[in-house]
Length: 253
Image (cartoon, rainbow, N blue to C red; front, side, top):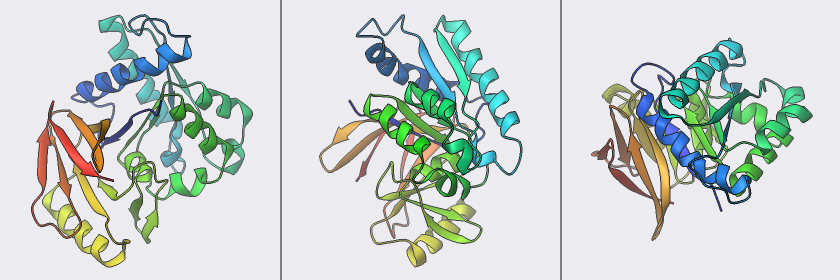
């Protein structure tokens, strides 16, 4: 069972992000149930691992601490049994660390908060940590990224130095976090100039995200959660398809 992907527009863990965090925890219950030998998903312990790699140049400990506080805050009011751990992967050495790899392999939800958009592909590509993430997802775990974390999960990303290939968890798109019209125009011009053919982009407002909700003919359906909206632009499109909380987007790829 391949697990869902979550893409988020940033402002993660802030007030107002509760609907998306709730949706992630609910989506991760299926993985927790499978991991615990087919037990009821209602009572299964959801193992969450925060992966603050995008903050490696700054304060990964602070990003992780905010995540622990926010995620535990969503468990307690709803009597959801969760455990939140941190895999502090900030370089090649920590991406090969056995304890970090074990945490990722056993996770039901792996969450990558924001930071610098070039760091996740640079640090994780070809490492035991990435192999562990892929293995967890093969078992059904949710892999979710916010802002730079979401950008890195896509096929193509943008950095201050130019376009780079992402980790490719989602084909056919780039993620535009902190969405607004200025970013939309800049990203469209950059992608049309630099990205490989067929790349569209998904704009996401802050505290708002999309969680993959099953395959459709020729693509994938994404369910939106949060106070803002998601904007899907196929390559070269001038007008987006827009979806808001509780609605879905069908995206090719």
